[in-house]
Structure formats: structure tokens, C-alpha cells
Image (cartoon, rainbow, N blue to C red; front, side, top):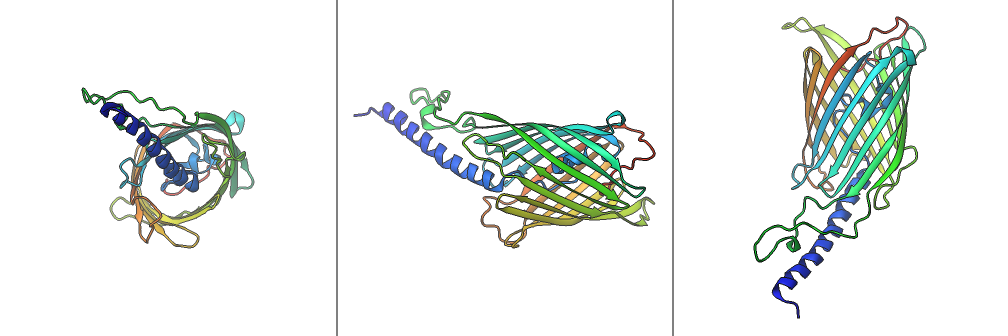
Length: 335
């Protein structure tokens, strides 16, 4: 017969394994069925949206972002990232990189680190485009570091003991590739990208499906603000994501009166069984640009484990590049 102490340890081990299996099944099912994270600020995180945006604005930049998703969870999903790009005339385009970490409630994490080369082509006086390739690696793995189980508590002293979890699938590092193009025709901007061209295999045997993204928008300068005499611009835009069984459409617009800008979007699946509303506010101060957004369910979305997500992006213009007269910078909304 088991003693009281051994019974606690035995039940703790059983509970630990059971909780691990259930949590990992839920977290991995959500993360894999949703595939890549869908960000509410695609035009603030240009290189995550499309690698062809590297150097597209005609100057170097560095951006960092953070997203906390499904805030009603005890441990919300959290995403962090940094990206940078710099136009280099000698290579007829730009170079850049992205590093993104996705933390699924402390149970499963994915880290992506990728380098970008974008070639810029001038097609006519009104039309220019960028074509990009992206290559890097994805690291993925399980962790129980944020969980505390009964067998980690010493019943005599009530102190916490280190965990001794065994049997977890090992972490895995695999190559990853993407490509994309982006262009501008007068005030119209557009593009498309394809990520995970080789459908990389994550830890635990989960394969990332190919992700196709398409986007377009138009810049309207319609008036001047009475307060600042700055141009008032509106940039309606649409973004389309397709990955595995998931297809999403986000449509809305930026409104900009420098140094301030705002935006509102609706994001939904193609059947419109759920709709998420996104609101954004931002400011540009010299070389620094900061944007914060909040998205929440506007229609029933019972399939989601929690409502509401915050996202913040900070971008810094690090170098102004005087480009050749024949090359036009790819315009993006509100900037």
C-alpha cells in the first residue's frame, strides 16, 4: 500500500501527465488549426505581411511588436517580434530580417528567424514593384515551465521542487522559405506572398500548411486639416489570408492627419460565422512611430477560448536613403 507521501507523489505524476496531454492537445489543436498568428496591424508589420516590403518606403527601419491574444485565458497567447530592412542601391533592392516568437500559453512555442532579399524593378514611370525571397529556420518545442504540479511540492516543508518531466517530444529546428511581390501604381498599392513553401514539420509531428496572403489598398488625399493644415488622407485596404482550412478577410481603412492616424477593420472567415472588429490609434513623432490596437468579437465566436486582444508596434526610421531618380518607393497607407 502506498504511504501518504508516496500517494501524493504518485497522484501528482498521474495528474502531471494527464494535464500535459490535455493541455497540449488543446493548445496544439488551436495553434495548428489556426496556423500562423493573424496580426491586426499588417501594415505596421510589413515584413511579416510580405517580405517584398523590405526597403519599400525608401529608407531603413526597425520595428518591434507584441501581441497578447485571448486575454480571458489565464495564460494568453503571446507573440513578440522584431524586423528590420535597409535599401541598398548596390544590390538593386533591399536586405532585411524578421525574428518572431509565438508562445502558446507557456506550453508550446515557435520561434522564426529569417533573412530577406528584395529586388526592386521600375516597370514604368507610374508602376514599380519589389520581388522578394526569404529563407531561415523555425524552432519549435513543448515546455511545462509555467505549470506547477503536486509532485513538485515537498509535503514536509511545502517548498517547491524542480520538475522532472520526461517523455516530451524533442525540440525541432527546420528550414523555412517564403516569397512575395509588392507594387504600386500611382496611389494604388498591392501585393501577395507565399510562406512555408516546404511545409515545415514542427515538434510533435505537426506540419505547417502553405500560407497565401494577398493585399491591396488605395491612398486618397482629400483635404487639409483645419487645425494643422496637414493633408487628410484615407487609405481603404483589404487583406486576404488562406492557410490550410482557414480563410480570412480583413477590410477597413486608415485615416491620417499627421502626426496622428487611426484605423478600423472587420475581420471574418468567408462564411461570416464570426466577425472580429479591430480599432487602431497611432502617432508619428520624428523618426519614431507607435501604434496600438485592440480587437474583439463583434458577432458570436464561441469557437474562440477568450475574447479581446491587444497589439502594439513601435517603428524607428534608422536611415534615409537617397534613391536613384528612376526608382519610386512603394507607398504604404498613412505614412
